[in-house]
Image (cartoon, rainbow over all chains, first blue to last red; front, side, top):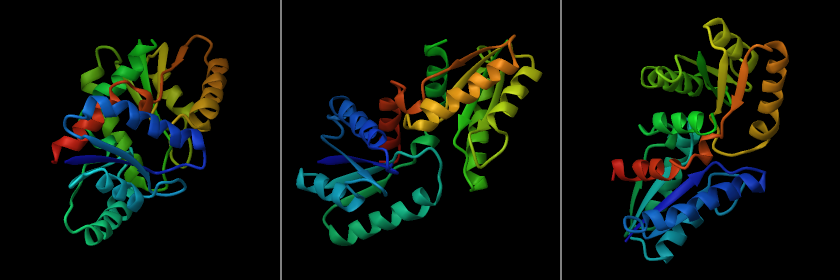
Amino acid sequence: MQALLLVAHGSRRAASNREVETLASALAPELEERFPVIEVAFLELADPDIATGIRSCIDRGARSVVVVPYFLAAGTHVTEDLPALVEAARAVHPGTTFTIAGHVGAAPMMHRLILQCATERV
Amino acid sequence: MQALLLVAHGSRRAASNREVETLASALAPELEERFPVIEVAFLELADPDIATGIRSCIDRGARSVVVVPYFLAAGTHVTEDLPALVEAARAVHPGTTFTIAGHVGAAPMMHRLILQCATERV
């Protein structure tokens, strides 16, 4: 069973963290065929952390975890910190497959999404 | 003529700022029918700032500027700082119409974009 772990930076503002959790909840019904398990984790400033988010995926039955960096830019959080944390999880969970997806800012669909933002209220 | 001003937070990492500029350049051909002018501006830490980005749009012939917040969460940058800066621009450019679009994190298409991220490399 495959899980999607949406990883955001995390904020001191609880509302910003909730925004990510709400997004993940809204995603769940749409993605459940491909990803029966969807969890959220934060790199810093908020809980759950990455290790806890991965543990939740595995506890819910996932044997494959796709980590999606909910970041707009490929800063060191995306290129170094997150891969190091996933590598650590690989050592702890040898029976689980981990994949790190591209960060959302680099998705080809971002062009159309920006157009959607720009035109919906115009 | 309508302009799209893509406003990002701005980073101390030049590569992150370039990533936004590259995205805007890639957008331009796709959006040029609707938005003949596309510019980028940064809220802090990088140039051009919002006032300069708006000035560039107007210098290139725009009489209507749609500001798209390239932010994942509706923090105070999106809810307070950016509207205040656009309000200031309204006073400086009374002949120009300004609209602030929803931030990219709230776009309905974000669901599909996350799925695209999660499945393209899996």
